[in-house]
Length: 420
Image (cartoon, rainbow, N blue to C red):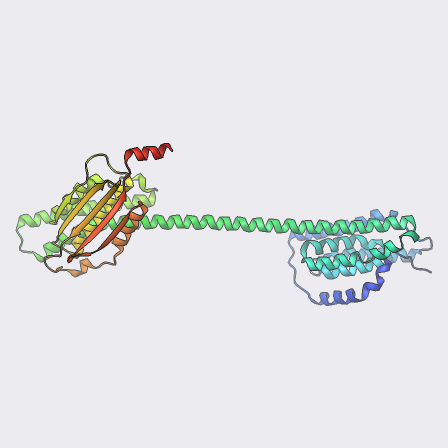
């Protein structure tokens, strides 16, 4: 009894090297974890391969002398090929090679499983593996074309359909892989964008914390320094007249009240939100600041601020903080020294702030109060820079001098910029 000749039997000569390579890949066993979705996809492809074989079998040319036993053998081999698709995730290339070679030796019942295996390779494996599998699938094409005039019409139609299905399967697999790569790329970009948003948010929180730290250093440091000065005076001058003790106690009480008020403002920022929601000092508040320092016993000479319209809020607030920090440093590092403050507006549309203190007349009785890390001057320089100005500081004639300039554009210039 003669075995039926399939239109893929011409591939038998290529079976040796690919079968050996398939055995090598079969030894590379990997554990694959399938989700419910994966199992559903595998069962769906299994049913597709089986239904394809059943639906297409009536259109396949069959020799007249084929025995029923051989047809049963073909159907059994097709069923095993469909069942082997459950291994496509573990050995995709090896399975595709085996099914392609078996399809050329047995019957068209292997075409459906072979299509699924080739699709799996094209969709999941590297380009090189896909190219090798495609070359194996189309290896019989030159031989088929050379024998085309001698083949019956039904055999030619069946072979053309087979090669068209394999080509479409490979194309669909490549499209699926490209789509998965695109989705992975978009997901990665989304994750990078989310990380960038988180980084910007963290940077904003850090800047807010730094701003709050500067506010606490400038405002609370000023008040607490006044407390320290008067408490030290009471400690070292226990025989002072009762009126002076009462005046110092009043200053201590008022400074403590103002310190608590500043602390409530800072806590309000932490709870509520932006800095603009609470009152901020302005350039016109310098007189009140100097009066408080003089009431604490400081010798201060103030020139300015200039008359006329007030500067922009950020400029006035920055100038106020500069003077406040300089007075705090003078009380801490040069107690009893004379402090000269000059605030003026220059023709170059600038607000200049200059604070100079003379050498202290006597050493600090409690040097612990003067301990500092220079963070105040660093914060002042940062404030000036953020306001668009510049600040310099350093020793001068035994004392210390701080110079700063801040931009103060004319009102007509600001209006023109707003209209532009």
